[in-house]
Image (cartoon, rainbow, N blue to C red):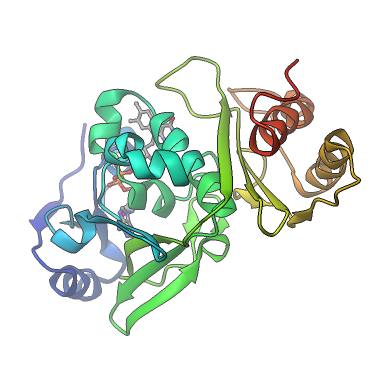
Length: 285
Ligand SMILES: Cc1cc2nc3c(=O)[nH]c(=O)nc-3n(C[C@H](O)[C@H](O)[C@H](O)COP(=O)(O)OP(=O)(O)OC[C@H]3O[C@@H](n4cnc5c(N)ncnc54)[C@H](O)[C@@H]3O)c2cc1C
């Protein structure tokens, strides 16, 4: 049995924020509804008011400017991101992460903004956005501000968004010689959240490697950046990354896997990802 709620489809960000503000904690932003409405159905509890932002032009744009990075509206569906050739080419981890979410039908509704605002530790796009150095633009009653993605996730399903604040865009910095990749280990392909998801990026100009891990702690985790010295073997870098990852993660036993299995998967996925971004085709098992 689904609870009752009022529904308003707004045509501007300001109108939406005013409605959220006027209804205090009893209203919620609605995008694709693939988390929110499933949750309402499962719990039988709903906010009094759902404010639908999906019609707002600014929140549906995907703009890629040479030298200026990419701006992706919070309501852009994941399939649009997964199919965009420039995102696939320059921000490969994000395209792959978007493509790994649920099923084709879910991805037609599910949005990038909803995936990160929902703040599940298993959100697939989160590790990709973390290694790509993304930030989010948010708007609320006190105007707009920018939040680095690593400051967005605070606890399980909690963010640093203030009451009545919405994410309007996700901003990716410009990249020149950066390669990135995403891996997800799941029980069944499609329709399943990650046992672990992980992303890595390699900035060939700076010689830096970034790794982020999801589903292994209360929030997705960004490891400290690694410098790759010319005389270090890749396997030694992977070992360093694993030592740090094992310190930082705190996996739990749940229906998808045991904590022990998650810990054991970390070095395996690190091996494939780091070899993948440093030397595509190298390090094959
Ligand atoms: C069958 C199925 C399979 C799934 N598989 C996966 C999976 O493999 N991987 C994965 O990561 N997820 C998965 N999901 C979860 C879900 O599809 C994604 O998290 C999706 O991206 C959520 O986006 P949405 O637009 O539907 O968000 P909504 O459900 O509309 O919103 C989710 C939450 O975010 C808030 N919100 C939405 N937009 C904004 C905004 N712009 N600003 C502030 N707050 C906002 C809402 O108030 C709500 O709390 C699955 C869901 C289903 C039903």
